[in-house]
Length: 492
Image (tube, rainbow, N blue to C red; front, side):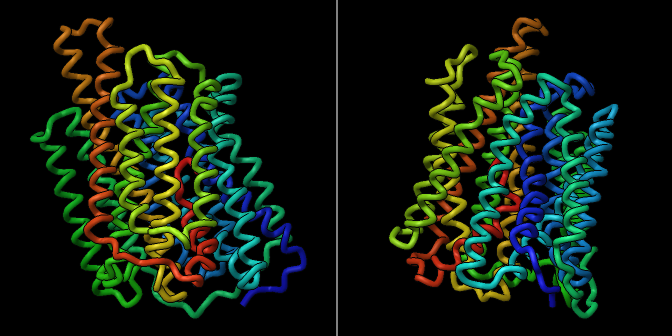
């Protein structure tokens, strides 16, 4: 049950603004990474990647729990709690004095986002009636939330260059305060459901397992695969993942009903949603560092250079959403990852002194076009034939996989890139003049690993995705399922 809403448009605007803030943070940080590294003394890329992965892992790990809490304790209440936590963590992140502090507050930002995003979408779905009214609202929702990616690229560059990188976090505070004040007045309350046990243990163990895995990979790059701390972190990851699986099989109301992964459409969709963001996170991370540290672009110029990605992605997704019912969805899921692989291949050959138009822009456009086709088609194929009661779980799984896959993929790329750069620097006997070439060589190797992720994703589509032409009902519901996938979309 939900209160009667007198100003639906204003309620939609304030909820979409909250979501905008979460999506904004996915791209605004990438442009500022070199400035953050210099200001706080991050020693290498393996350490710096935690600015991205800490947010993504906690966001993904607690996303399903956030949705469950909003159902049990009231959607507006959890939405406001998420906004408040996100604002407090943003303020603290802007005041951070060392890498550890920033990583901690980025984790808390991720937790705030995990509470905010699913409750905001649930409110939109309950405020607007199913059919034309809801589809129109979700179209506006996706447009406003998706604009956060483009705005983040530009705003991150402008704030970093002309004010201070800390303002990429401070900017969230006034937005959040405005959202909270207006939401209290115009966003309706929803009555909590009957109290049931919340699977907090599931969220904690799966997030702890994944963080331990990323930490192990980061330590492997610095101290070697056989070091005690590396092996200990791997062991902790395995134990925590075993605890998570055991918990999910035993509790009455699990975070994830694991038997849903027995369906080929769901398992293939989740696997692809793990693999493709693994390549995407790495592209944004390394391209930002390359443009600023190697080509000496300003932060603002870097943001502008990245904009074609968001523009292309939105354009292709918009066209494909209208035509998907006439196309062979499996064929798209086979070909689109190869288009992404071609874009990554472009980056894998990037020279020390690149020309943006010939050496970088084609890779950005190929990556964006392929990613748009994958996100739209994979969301539709994975949720086709799923009951309305299960669609929230499946969409949540896709969101979770997207964040976790991106974080783990970036960790793997960091291992390869760091190892290559260290080897080249050692081979030059520590000559400082060799560092730029060593860094670029490391980026190239990292992008080649990302190419492998994309090719494997295409193979998964060939082997696991069933031939299925979306029905009219599937296409009619695509706006809703695509919007449910929006909260975690990086850079979109």
